[in-house]
Length: 79
Image (cartoon, rainbow, N blue to C red):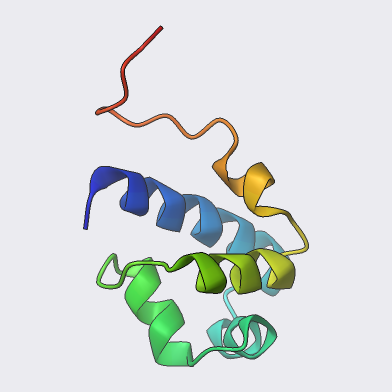
């Protein structure tokens, strides 16, 4: 898993804790995926596809742009 995916998973996790109070089962249902998928994402063991990202964002009541906006990772060229 590359660094950007890890940062993305961390941002999703941060928002998940606020909205779902660590209830992975409820979050998985709202994201229309398995709880094991959510656990693997949070452990950085699974990549996030675009369709899954969109479902996760929907469950978090945010847009993908909001999640991705401002994410800076070490491999990015600074301007």
